[in-house]
Image (cartoon, rainbow, N blue to C red):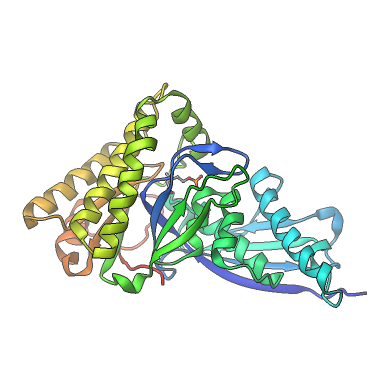
Length: 353
Ligand code: PMV
């Protein structure tokens, strides 16, 4: 019998949206109420490394297992199960057409996943995590699917994960189909198109967010009246402006859409009933700091954005690093680089190809 251990590894980067995904039209398939667009950050700074292996020698009663940053992690959730099921089905289809292939689809899976940035930083790691998990298994299974096809599977693990299968500037097209077959990610431009782009991450709080993205979205979709306008008018306009800003390498336009879209997203959260507040006093101080930097420069050289938590991501161009990073270093007290727990700063993050 074949007791060999089959193995494959991959890494996937973190992405930070500049036009936000917020709202599901189908919670089971993770289909969004709007398209979104993100920037994929350099793997040297933020990435998940995942090794997938399978073997008929792995005890079948243990089932599939996942070790996340050294800790056993539950894989019984519907999202991760949907990813396993879709990938196994793709492998089984290959095995059905070629009987010489080992029957990997029938073997238990073992996944070992690690982040190169502190988990305590409270950064959205689910995007990189699910993207790495899906690609590691796809590599193990020697699937021929392209990144957009894999994005359909990663999307079912965590919506934002579909965008981490590409580097550079990435759009997640919401699609129309009820089965989600056209709700996928595609690259808008590679990092090399606009290589001067940088990100700075201000870690305001390492605490776990109090309202998770799934329940936060549900509450917003169900109760916010501003949300309807965001989905129908604000986001479609922002997507068009953002794609043009990227094509034109127009930082002023890129920055304005980024900040306005973050403001719009957080407004729908506070318009929810009961309201949801992700930003705190330090987040608001970061907004003011960006405004001060832009005012001092006499033009827009920095843009803030906030996800479902208080941490700030600031986008800027390399030529303006001194003005932008200097201001934030002063706010944080000079510290640069990851620091567990307290407020800290990581600057000069380039994009992933
Ligand atoms: O992928 P999720 O379900 O964790 O949702 C992410 C939502 C935001 O980070 C707030 C926005 C986005 O587009 O990434």
